[in-house]
Amino acid sequence: MPFFPTEAATVVSGYGSPVIAFEFARTPVDLVAVFGGDADPARASRLSMMDQGNRWDFLFMTLYSLFGAMFGLAVRRCRATLGTVILVAAIIAGLADAIETRTLLSITAQMTNGIANPAGLATLWVPVTIKFMGLALSIISAGLFLGSRKNVTWKALGALTVLSALLSVPALLSPAGLGNLLTPSIGIGWIIMLAYALTRSVKGVTLTP
Picture 1: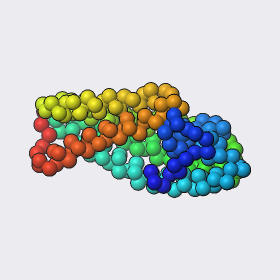
Picture 2: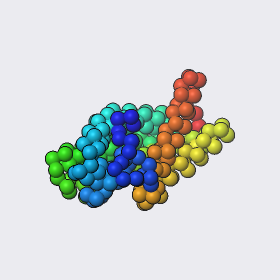
Picture 3: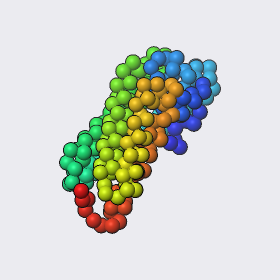
Picture 4: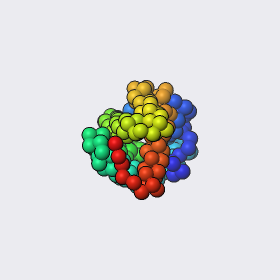
């Protein structure tokens, strides 16, 4: 996140951050709201910072896909269906994220060359939607697995995981107003999944029904 611009040309409070606003840009007007018009002195800096952040994003998407896939592989040992869903959904989300990020980099490159209506803008919503739905499905499945544990604490945290990931649905339906829910809806689930993985790893025991 430190590499991405922290402020858009226009206030995008509903999106929460310029990068989320860029991901959900659908028209040239949306791009101007994020980066500013040709006369905006900060436009070039915003474009450069967005590119820098998106290049680093390839590392991030690789790491979270591997994390989700490894969590799914572990879950498969006692809950085959849920484990498979976690694994596959995490990989699909990462692949969609890679397509999304390449599209974003293509759009900013075209904008730098003065193209007002870049190619790829009209179809950007496809990989963006697949990514967030894949992440949500992976995390919801992980939450259902945690909810099946005997420990009451993990049952409660599993329910929290599911509920937080479900916030992705209204956020995707109304990103301009609720897009700022996407980061916490995914992040809360990841943190709980990581806590469970670390706890089980420290105990050095295998997953049991």
